[in-house]
Amino acid sequence: MIPLSTLQRTLQRRPASVTLSPMWLSTHAELGVGTPNGRKLLLSENDLELLEAEYRRQTNDASLGFDLTQDRVAVSAQLTNEKASQRQVFGGFIRISSSDGIIHFSKNNGEICLPPGSYLSLREGDMLEISEYDRVLIIENGALMENIEAMMEIVPEKFCHDTLYVYRGNDASQNKVFELMKNMPGSVSLGLFFDYDPAGLSLAQTGFISRHNGPVSIIVPRDIEVISTIGRGDVYMRQLEIMDRLRNSFNENAWIGRHVMNMVKHKRVLMQEAMLSRKIKLTEETVRR
Image (cartoon, rainbow, N blue to C red; front, side, top):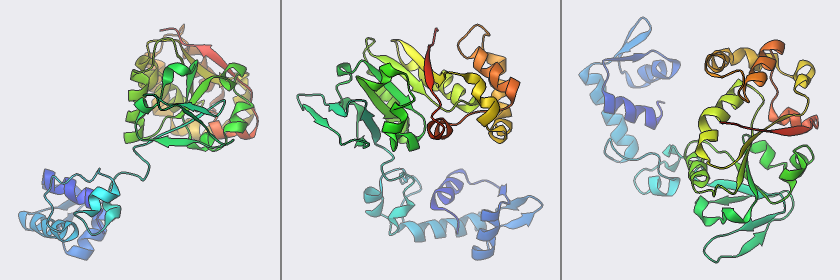
């Protein structure tokens, strides 16, 4: 059955045709909607009326502007299927931990000590007193948040003290992380620990570095040649388009230059999970902007 979010977008746009994907082919078979024409499914006004009737059935006559990005509780007030919400459970929360287990809260709310190997989910970044930390380390993959102690064995020593660890998040939660970074004092340094691949470099360069006015460093393998033996060629090949964009945009004297060329040289990349499992020692490089 067609996802409710796709149904809503289609009715808002009211296109004359859509790409005949497996999902639309299934919708055509189930609802009798549209006329297949090559790689397209043609939609008449009558077809759109059938789709609108299906939308009303699924949403208890909700408007086409009904916000499906609300959480499941809010969505269930209107819809019978609360899972129609596009927001992931915990999706709007910031996931944090710290090198010393101490979480400092703002507004005279004190602090708590997390049990070893655990992390905390917060609704808003301003619940934290960031100035109590020397640095913040943004971590790309959630698997590392579940293996904090193992990560501390490979990151540079300074990131094992007075450091707030923050999962970079996705969608709504990433926006919350951006808000947290916006409010970081310039006295707090920012570390970025992402996959050692074109996507990770691009994410650091375009998504995070410019959002902090204080010192920024990137966390990379101490021996970048290690990708020649344990790196993944298949991931490199899937990211060739991103690599091409990076090569056309970086200054060879910039921090990103030698890492891009190292990946091009070996045609391999290294994921965070592999760095953790292989205990690859890491170092930090200051990003000069």
